[in-house]
Length: 381
Image 1: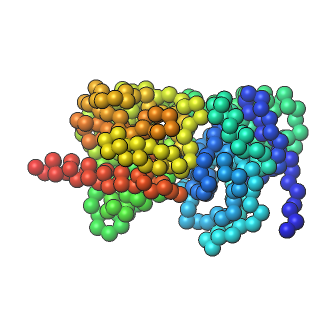
Image 2 (image 1 turned 45 degrees about the vertical axis):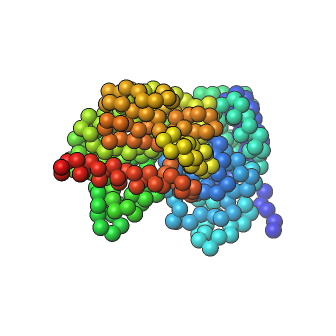
Image 3 (image 1 turned 180 degrees about the vertical axis):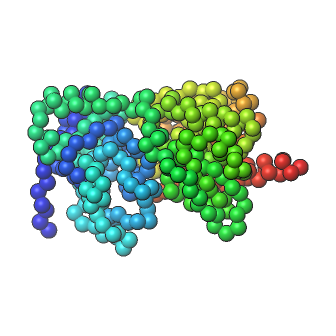
């Protein structure tokens, strides 16, 4: 099979590290935070995850694109990554569900990428130096001087302090109907929600009202929900003052709350805890997490560059009563979950909906249903 030559492309990190390769996807320039994802599959879910807004994703698996793209596995209506880095793009698409190639979608949606670079070496560099800004330049843009390219990268926006929720949230509320009999009604605050999340709740008889991130607590409560869900999303949780205020109001009224990823950080801030930026974050579908109550180890899907700063041992006091750290990452002891003891709220830092896997943590949706059932019984007692 004859391969059409690709135009040259250049990847430049903000510390000056430069790698030369071939254009992949759209031709042009892309800026963002360089992060690496460790999954060997699930690239379509990664690309369409709104949590990757503002990030250039480096795939550590060396061969990407062989299963193409379909219309069933997308987590949102578009690709959100700012840029894409692969070592060896597949020359053919071979899957019975594939409708088009990965590069077709990258080109159609204007996503600039680079191929033919040593992604393992790039990943090691990011692990040693930390996540940092990066630029991908292809076509005419790649002909600029190294000094000019580096200056453009260093003048691009940083992830710390970035408020990206308004970029990814829904503009209008919508409803995902319960499968079978409706048992509960949940309002899902869309901070960058993935499609699989309301689907997982719907499978458990939950009618999900997905609402914009700027809704007030009164608007949320106006739907008379049995519980409120705070989704994943991109950006720095230190900027999420509105979501934190809404969370705090719900906790004060003892409304059952479940948060994941960005929602975990929002709960942490509502409990008076701080957040901080991780050196290179957790991304991929193979992160080991321990449930501290059961000592059970789960393999989980992650996408976060920030974490909650909370006491690891025992209960701690918050403005809403006692709380504990419920889960920790076994790789680096980062807090991966919080549980309130005096109000009905809990959260995890990872993706229990786990598209494209694993499914060790999908029981958390059952726990949310149990939490709402207990609260309902308490109201009716």
